[in-house]
Image 1: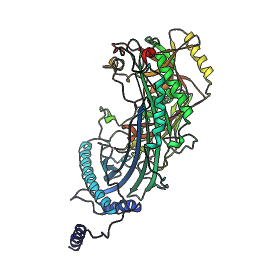
Image 2: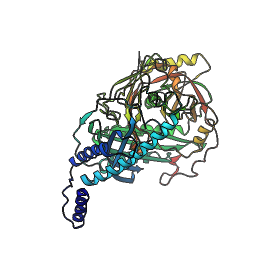
Image 3: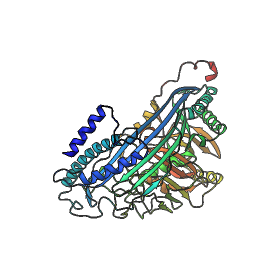
Image 4: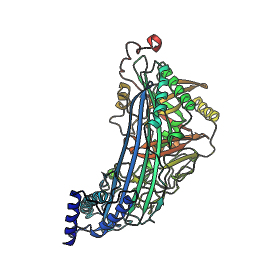
Length: 577
C-alpha cells in the first residue's frame, strides 16, 4: 500500500514538472540500473509453479557508426548512426537442463540512449519479464521433446551450462565522436582515382568507422565495461568483357581508427593496381574445365582458410533432444566430430588467439567474450590433427568448459566463433619455390596450374549478372559444397603467368586442407566483419600464408551474358574501348 502511494505521488510530481528524486542522468547510472534490476530479477521474477531464473545477464551495447560512400570522386552518402541495444539472457531450470541449445532464444531490444536511471530500469524490467516468459516456454518444449530420449532431462550428462569464473574488466572509453567527416576526404579521393579508368562500368568506395561500448552484468557477479572499434574502407569496381561477362575486383583497407589507415599514397597505389588488373581482365581468355592445382596467395589464402577451417570449428554439441537421424538443426559444425583425427596436411597448424598482441590492427582481438568468460588462446590444429574446438559455456563430451569464444552478432545471441585465427605452416617456402612446386605438378600432366589472388567476398553485394547465375546453376541438385568464385586468377604455363577469367572452383570443403602440399612463409592479415549486415556482425581476423592445393576441380563458367554498353560513358569518348 505504501509503495502504491509513493508511486502515485511520484507520478503526480512528474506531471507537475517537479524534480524526480530517483533520476540519475550520468554514465554511472547505466551500471547502477543494470545491477539493481539484475538483483530484482533474481529475487522477484517468478510465475506460479514455474522455476525461477538461475542465471540472468544483461549486455548493453552503445554503437556509434559513421559511413561515407563515393563514386568517381562524388560523395553519394554520408551519415552517422547512434543507438543502444540490450541483449537479455534468462536461463531457467538448472545448469544441468535449461532452456538453452534448443531453439533460438536471444532477445535483443532497443534501449533509451540517455543515461537515465529510471528509464533504463523500466526497460530492463519489461525486457526481463518478456525473456523470462519466453524461457519457461522454451524449457517446457525442450522437456516435452526430451521425454523418452536417452540424454534427456533424466540423464544429467554434462549439462547445458558450464560453471566459469566471472570476468571483471573495465577499460576507459575513448573520448571523441564518430563522424563521417573523419573518412569523407579519403573516400572521395580514392573514388576519384577511377576517373582515369573509363573502361570500368562502375566503381564504389565505402568507408565505415564504428565504435561499440559494451557493458555486461550477470547474476554471477561478472562486470565488463569495454569497447571495440574498427575502420574498413572497401574499394570495389566492375567491368564487362566484350562478350558481356561481368567482372569484379575489390581491395579492402582496415584499421582500428581513421588515423591508423595506411598512408594515402600507399592506398592509391593499391587501388590503381586493382583497376589496371580489372581492365586487363576484359580481354583475358576464359579458363577451361578440368583438373587443377591452385596456389592461393594474398587475401585469397586467408579467404580460403575462412571457407575451409574457420567456419567449421564450433564445438557446440547438437541439442540433447535431437534425434539420431536429424541434421542437428545446424548446431553441429563439420569438424566437431573429428577431434584427434587428421583434418589437414601435416604441414599445417592453427591457433585462435583473441589476446594476440600485434603492431597491425586485429578486428578479432578481445579480452572477454559475450558470455562473460575471459578469452583464451586455443590450439586447434597441430600438424594436421584436430586438437581443439571453439567453445562457449555449452559443454560437450570431449570439452566440458568454455574457452572464451562465445561471440554475438549485434542482433542475436552468442555462439562459438573465431576471434583471431592464425594458420601457420611447417617449413614455409618463398614464392619462388611455391611456383617451382606448381611447375613440378604441371609436368606430371593432366593438371592445369593456377594462381588465385582473390575470392568473391560474401560481405560485398552480389552483382546481378548472368555469369553469377551460371555459377550456381551447375551446383543445383548436387550434394557437394557450393562452388567458389575466384575474382583474380592467373594460369601458369611454363613459368608464364596469364590472366584468365570465367571459372569456378568446385568441391572445396574442409577435407581439401589435406591436399595442401606446400605453404608460404609470409602471412597476410585479413580483417572482416563476419555474419550480419555491414558492421552488425562479428569482428574477425584471419592470418594465413599462401597455400598450394594440389587437387581442385575447375569449371568454366558458361551461359548467356548481358551485352556491354553500346557506346562509351560520357566524357570519355572512344577511350573506353
